[in-house]
Length: 378
Image 1 (cartoon, rainbow, N blue to C red):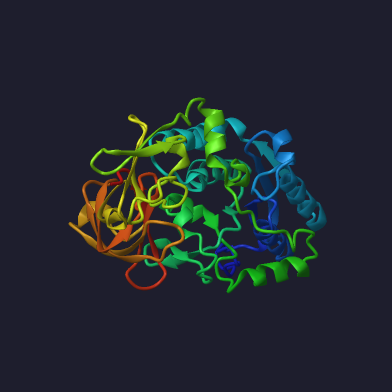
Image 2 (image 1 turned 135 degrees about the horizontal axis):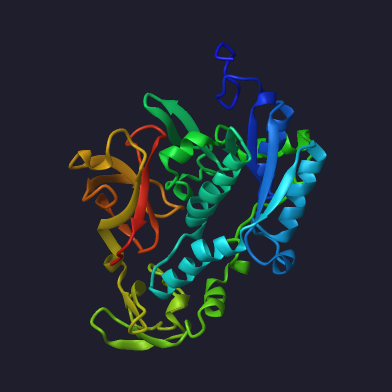
C-alpha cells in the first residue's frame, strides 16, 4: 500500500478504500464537494447538523442550517448514492455559539458567531464524529486552501479572493488542519462551482447563497438578542466623548462601533460616529470620524499557524485583517504570551471593535498565520 500513489485527498490508497465525511449544509458548495468525491470513487458519508429548532427552521429561507437545507442535503445524498446522517446539535450550538453571541452584544462587543461555530462545533464535535465513523478525513465546502509545507499542512487563502473565507477559519488548529480537506479552495470563481453542480445534475445548482447568520432571521440581531436576553434593549443616553447628553437611544444592542446612520442626533454640525459602547451605563458614545482611528489592537486566544512557536520572537511582520470585508494591511505582531499579543497597524484603521477577529497573513503570498480575538476596543 505504501507504493500506491497518493490519491486526490493525499492518502496512499485507492479512493474506494478512503472514507471521507463531508459536512453538508445543503448549499451548492458542500453538495458539489460530496458529489465530486463520490464521482472520484471515495467512500463518502454526508453529515448535516441540525443547529436550532427544526420547526422554526422550516419557515426560514436564506440561512445555512435551516430545515429546507437539511432536506436538500439529504436529496443530494440520495441522488449520488451515499449515506447521509442528520445530527442534533441544538444544545451544543446554543451553549457554544448563541449564548456567547448574545452576551457579547450585551457587553458592547461585535461578535462573529460563524467563527465560533467552525471552531467549537464543526471543527470540534463534528470532526470527532467523523473520526468515530472511521473516516480518514473530513471535507467541507469552504473556500480556503490546505497546502503541504516543509513542516506539515498549511492554511492558504482561496484562489478566488471574492470567495475567500480565511477570516472565518483562522482558529483552525494545526491538528484539525491535518484532518480537514477543502476541495473547492482552488476554484477561480463561484461560477465554476455552479457549473460542477449542473454537471452532476444537482437540484441545488442554482440555489442562492445564504446571506444571514443562520439563527438571525433577516439580519435582525437586536430582535434575537432581546428574545434571548429580555431587557437587553433598554433605552439610554447618547453622549459625546466628554459625557454630554446629545439624545436618547433605543438600546445599546442596536448600535455598533463605526455606525453613523440612524443615531437620531442630526443637526449638530460635523457628522458623528459611534466610537464606543458602555453597556453598564447604557451609553452610546459618539465622536468625530478621527476618533475611530486605531493603531494598537490587543488580541487574545491566539491560534498560531506560522512556523515555530508564536512567542519565540519579540515580533512578527505580518498583514492583518480586522474585518471580513476589508483587505489585509501591514502590521507588527508582538507576542505577550503564547496566546496573547499586541498588534500595531502601520496605518490606522477605523471602527476596530471588541469581539471581532484579527487574522494574520504572511507579508507575501497566500499563507494564513492564524489570528486572535480583539478583546478591547477604543
